[in-house]
Image (cartoon, rainbow, N blue to C red; front, side, top):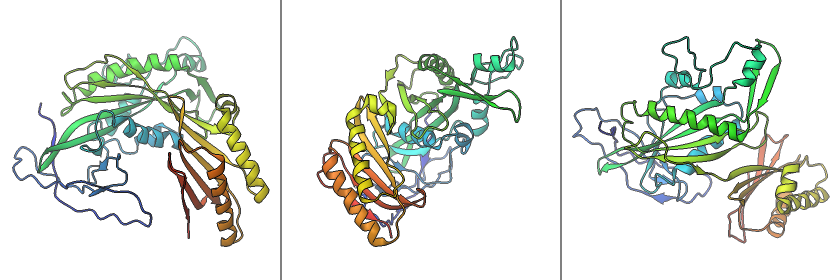
Length: 386
């Protein structure tokens, strides 16, 4: 069938901000009056993208057809953010941000998605569940552990390109397949929680089987019969983790295909500093943060602690984020502390990765200052909130 075609009205979006992001200009779309088979839809297409390699997001009344499902299925807010942002990041390899627009998923509906996330049930003729069926050979606890719910969520993102000067059309979709690393369950309402660890190998075996079925179902959805599909598998962190999980594999399904040819391994991870894992795996950065914390404590002994989060790709640190919760008793005190921390950043950390420092107060609930240094730069940016 023909690709879904959407027409958009020219609306100039003025972006007002107190900060100074870098903007990239693009052309606006105009309404297509020639379409007869569908009524034209209107949307705001921002005239600027916040960064050169970011997608411009269509702003219209067509919110995600599965809006809100993700918060019911994934309990760790960090995982929710990384699943959404990371899927966009990996989509750039298939859908170039310079000529593609982003739109929330419009094809997999809320009800359909909930059906897919259930357990399969051989007693129901129309069972659509993609998680394993639960057995009755042992106790409830034993059966839950033998047949954990591996699949948490399927995130859909749509990518569109210009059809002509007057309209855009769907160019492809991305699907993020969120898989559990730990299965948390109860055997009775109000009873204790049980936890079952899921190995990487076991998770991948289940994910590949789930993806094969998802592709077949997606190809039966009107409008998705012959569009390219990027699929990325995401391994969630444990529920109370202070850092998110990570994408582990991805594949591209051509528009005329309905199966996976091969998987590409993704080498990414988020690392918590300080931690025993960070100390043994990334000793240099761990030592930098220990020294940084020691210097902070000599200046301001009543700070809480330094908490760091590193994002690694292919074993290389790409971004280091540090949060410093401190109680301040005046603006001068905040300014002096921020200046001191900025000097420590420039002298104590290498500049081959992005670095962001958030200075907070009120048990970390209020951000007081921001320090940011882009990879490759000798100087950074400092902002103190008023």
